[in-house]
Image 1 (cartoon, rainbow, N blue to C red):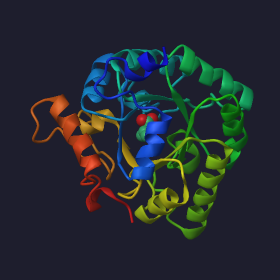
Image 2: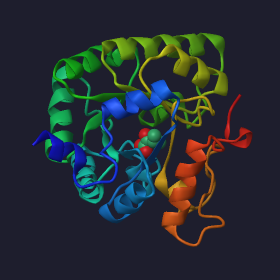
Image 3: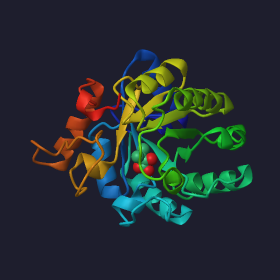
Length: 276
Ligand code: KIV
């Protein structure tokens, strides 16, 4: 039974938390992308992506909102279920939406929905000092957790826009301390969004769990981007860290393969995609 679960008839076994931990230890960059439906999940998986996130960015790129705030647990369950059907090898993470983890009990209840109804293997929450007890509670119940630090889009109305975080020393020290405390509380992965390279590097060095960056410089253990940015579907202004991988490629699959290759050989992110 267990052998079947590990192999699922694949040339390479499915990625799990141990695979990701080993990749960090061996210095092998982890390629991650978001996905929101089964068709793109098939392509993202075929391109060799290690980790797929059903992000609450779906509120912006799928639903057309200006922020991720309106996304509900039902929305994430629906999209996670679709993505799960398209994946074979990649590790599936689902986002806990705004106000779905205000207490340990509520967080546990909603994580269970994402895992049981959606098929997620890990949940991601936007964390900090206020979420330590929640991460501890989830870890105690063997729920794998990714803690999202740096720019936390669910706090956009509190911080006044989508801005680079951790630029001053005090903020950087606090973020480093929060990352360590979240790891100690049981987080299995830390995701860092929009922070200077130096902070991305420092957090990555200090933690023993994998650190995945988006606009966090080249030194993190892996990179993640929003699928629609990679494929140049997003119109208008995109963040500095975005690279259009569709350029020079004739199919979405070729573009996704180019993204995975660029993460693996560390040619992405280049200096023009970074904050320092
Ligand atoms: O919601 C999302 O897609 C995310 C990524 C930007 C990391 O959190």
